[in-house]
Image 1: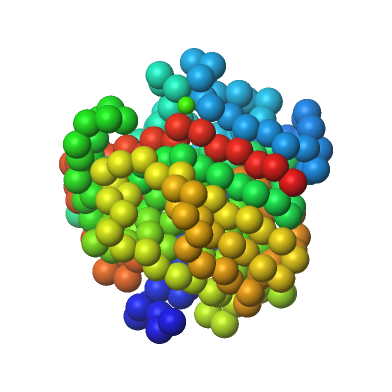
Image 2: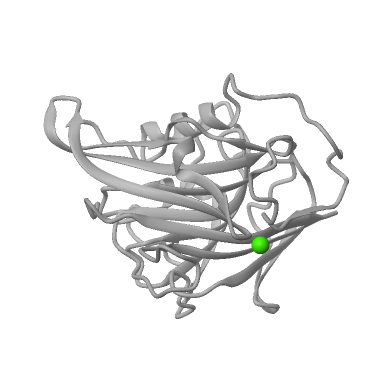
Length: 275
Ligand SMILES: [Ca+2]
């Protein structure tokens, strides 16, 4: 499939310096030794406990992808991660502020949660509603330009990456993506990526159950129980972190230009893994 202009690199981790930022977040100093079940244990989280299970999840606090010099700077802030009424809620705000030499830049505050463990081959499922202005899970809301939301697997410069990802400027297009960067000491190249797009799902308006089955040399993607596509190129093998995030953009390439002043929300009803 032909790639949209400028999308390849940005899918990895945002743009340019953003790739470094996310890497630091994922394996930064805040990393805590794994607890509980190992990489071959099934698990699920319905977020029904009233607060996030901090023995299982790490809330990111620091730079987010999508930075553009003198224009846009994004952060993940723990204040934008909550558990409420059975949902994990990831909030995003965008405001005017000083970015480098520009006093009229855009600053984004999003949210990100990742697993403490890494996990390997198996079935991964998220029931979630992508970025919208809906301030509760069931009310109507629009997908405003200026964000990326996702449930995905990731480790070390996309040595492993498998995603369900929604750039909010994509006119209701969900991206089913996988990466295998064979040399994670360097950033991935466009040739390391395989993706499929799905349109018309109203991903910002309703919940969908997004599932992939990852096995050696193959990833099968499903939405609401319906098989969508198999990818057999760029299939990674290394265990990776389970991540859900919602981050701001101000780019015409991926996520769209910022919508300053509009608060947006991602709702995750449940996430699970089985080997
Ligand atoms: Ca739930």
